[in-house]
Length: 378
Ligand code: NIG
Ligand code: FE
Image (cartoon, rainbow, N blue to C red):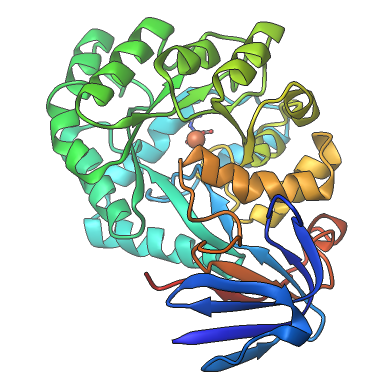
């Protein structure tokens, strides 16, 4: 089965020679990008999509979400907007609701949120556990996540659950819980932050995950300066996510090691924290990703376009840099070479925009611009 898209006003491929082309055509064969060129030269195909001058971009790669949970925390958000501070302990509210939910209820909620993401142009998504914090519930969350994406992350080390001794909890996270969760996970994550886990605890968790065959990523430097980013570099994590408070040494270490800095501006929007300085990171040669962090506590948005608009307005990126971070950057973060771009051979995951150019993603914030989301079945 082949599909040709003709009359593309602007095609973003992130190809080295010509990252953005005008008046282009693209052919999809067997779920892969098989041909890219001038619209007038587009070869015949089984099916034709007329883009009529619209822009086509790679589907968004959302490299950080917590889509499997129950309940919401709208009241907590409202209280923050009235002046209360965000605290990591709010996670426990969602843990209580999540433990009480059936697997069917959790799956239905996650599927509904995934449908929201998809409709807004996200074609690859990472999903974490972390609202179970006991062996059975963490494993249930990961089973639900694994039915939706190959990019699953075990985050048993989100916070220490109420009434549990921290050392005993680390032993559980690196022992029986890891054993139950590892079969359903690609990644291991830990929330390294005051009020969650310190550097030694986080290192223990990540090393245990690596020994079980999982790949490390980390929640780091979200609420203040701290050791998370340096730990990410030390263990060879794929990504250090949040990166809101960074020292010069943190920025240098990210640039040196190639660890991707995952920026989650929905969090700063929803916690009234200062935004991370994306400009500083790009100028230092750091690889940057933008993701939603979709979760009920700190960032209940499923919209990558909203995050792009925030990155442009508040974090010093150009619209083109922000789109790159939301597509190619996400692919780097998940160590995927087949998504996040539309070079020859890429998965044919793409979005036809209701707009002549990708600039409109930030230029028209809050406007649904997705005319058609194409996702390869393979
Ligand atoms: O990525 N930082 C830790 N975890 C989530 C917040 C979780 C919550 O408050 O429910 C995050 O922001
Ligand atoms: Fe998160």
